[in-house]
Length: 342
Image 1 (cartoon, rainbow, N blue to C red):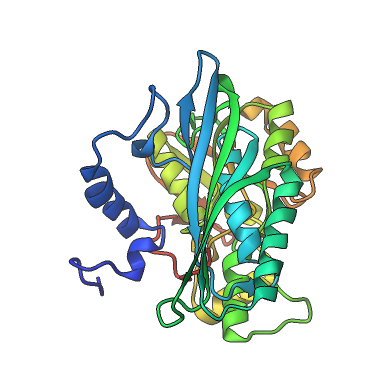
Image 2 (image 1 turned 30 degrees about the vertical axis):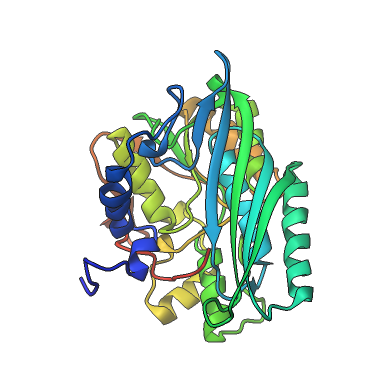
């Protein structure tokens, strides 16, 4: 591989196998306590952690840093992605997010009008799920050390223990749902960076997903969830399957991909399945409620393109039946092919 094993490289932060190895070896290997009161902790490498607060209830908490480039992009900005990304990590644990903490490191010379746009965007995103921004921190740094802004957000949800959904609960026979078209966010960023233009501009899918989770919970049984950000659905599907010691069989024809995403992917030689999404969920559901869950998701604001894309099987591989009648092994990416998208 073209990176120095002794130095931190961009690949180490890209969400693929190299990043997972770094987390396991350097981070987890040097932390002695990773959970509280028997809750879900860092060692689970799930989207959030849980802290039991009594016999029936838990606090769900997560944290994320955002360095997207450019900070304003088609369909969103760093403020929206900072709020949605963290709210979504709580949401896919099956619990409604209630608050957000916000820390910003801002470059000297940053436009105050841009900062105001970013804060308004964060606020509007939180309003969509009824979450409050309750605390924060602001630092300003020399412009020669930072080109614009880095935002770190921490989210909190409070719910019942029996509501919590992990990313490791898949069982053989479950159906696999994707809540919309894949690759939109990463390809919108690349389209903006490379100057590609379309009659209908490709936009990021960045959005809070709680409404889709809430709708699904009301009508069906969710066994596992994950938001396919860095590493795309290829990484999310493999991580979910590996943790549950199961396989998957997918139908390529059922996986929604916008024509614009396919076009940019082909130009750049990038697999859209490995590209980050910021408003989608990969969801495992019991087969007998899968159609009800699908219809409920499709009725929400962001779920109209949701599809059942496959099912959970025996084995340990994610296999996709291709549109031309063959089979393809869907492997986890070594790294995200589009850096600094979230």
